[in-house]
Amino acid sequence: MMNEPKTPQASDAGAITRRYLDSILIEERLIDAREASLDTEIFGRTYKTPIMMPAFSHLNTFMKEREKAMQAYMTAARDLGALNWVGMCENEEFAEFMEVGVPTVRIVKPYADRDKVFSQIAFAEACGAVAVGMDIDHIFGSDGRCDVVMGEAMTRQTAEDLRAYTAATKLPFVVKGVLSAADAKKCVESGVRGLLVSHHHGRMPFAVPPLMVLPEIVKAVNGAAGVEIFVDCGIDTGADVYKALALGARAAAAGRVLIPPLVKSGAEGVVEQVEKMNAQLRMLMGFTGRAKTSELRPDVLWLDGKRMA
Image (cartoon, rainbow, N blue to C red):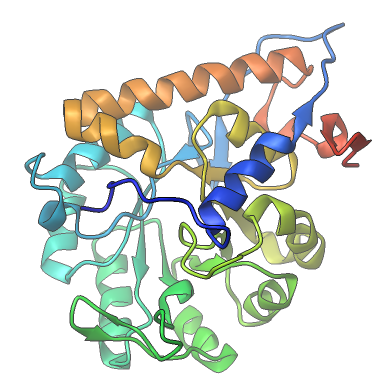
């Protein structure tokens, strides 16, 4: 089961990320502060929160405790006014998911079958997805060879491949699993419109925390062609979201923190969890004098006794 706890190891990128997130501190700026709005524009649409639903895969297969778990968390996204993401699935499943009626980004695996990649990109566009993308951090398995996921062979991806995908759709194309300025530059040069800074909950041992490398990625992209930058991994609280946005992300995806409430209470549980995160984010924005999510900056963040900007 995907939410079973594991014993942290020294190489556990998830635990490393948690420690880094908690080491970033926030200073107050209360004079002239106002109540904050969480409205956030992403790819030309305005959402009620910068907290996004994650690109879960196969929830309906593996989450036996909750019937139609994928539709439940998508329903939560709809009720929250949040942007939703969906991971690995077949076209028929994706069509069923889209019946929930929530703006959705479809993430396609780096299949060795290139025809399947292009088929899923085209199908996402035909179904009304707001964006489509690829999960490049699933190219390799734990043995260093190209991975096999649910019986499907994965393969390496090149900048030329990315250019072909971006040319194949009118939708913004997003690359999930960017964890370096080097990859970010190659994505932008290939016409990619969105970067999800992520280590996929620690698929690679000792992976750098997304927020640690985020400032370099933001600098490398430097506002090129309206490219949006997103973050996931360890986003459990409104404070985590605040730090991600202050360091340059447009929005952040919650992840495994949503699994227990989804199992226990379905869509209502997910809504309750995200609303708690929204409340803390709004409070921190008020305490730091930021009235809009677009106003968050790293000048109020401290790390190791030094201001981060």
